[in-house]
Picture (cartoon, rainbow, N blue to C red):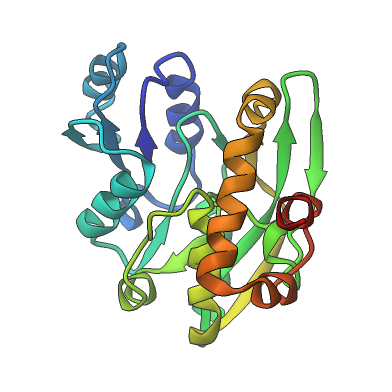
Length: 224
């Protein structure tokens, strides 16, 4: 978990992890506090039995993700945002899926998207990488190391999935096991940044590669 000034939502996220059905002996929570100036540090201290905290000066999301990957000791690796929620059986079902298919590189769940007014059930579509999110997916840690971890893109998750595809198949785990908070106002305000992110990804991968990876209306809009 990478977090920056999310003290208001962090306790609820931690509570969703505290009730995971997978035995606590089989997983660890690493939280990268990326220079928060709110009460994040105090919240993490109060929950020290649940997690390992690493405090660093503000370096941004990608650097925080790579710090977490470097510190991770498990066979599998997953990200969760500090304002999102995990279903109680999230880790148990995801790990079981990867255990059953050794050639798979990751397992991807369905999710709820929550805009504050209500939840929408979103199905992960493996033939459309843009239907996946940065968080909620369970990866084989060794494969993330093999591809060099996270790269500094605005859409770092799509770049990661594109590099991961040749290493093994993606598994779909049905059912909404992850709840993603969609911040509509923030998305609107960052429209140009999002479009610039798509253009940077196209420059690195080529427009054709991005289009064969799936369909996203915003991608097409950005490339016009």
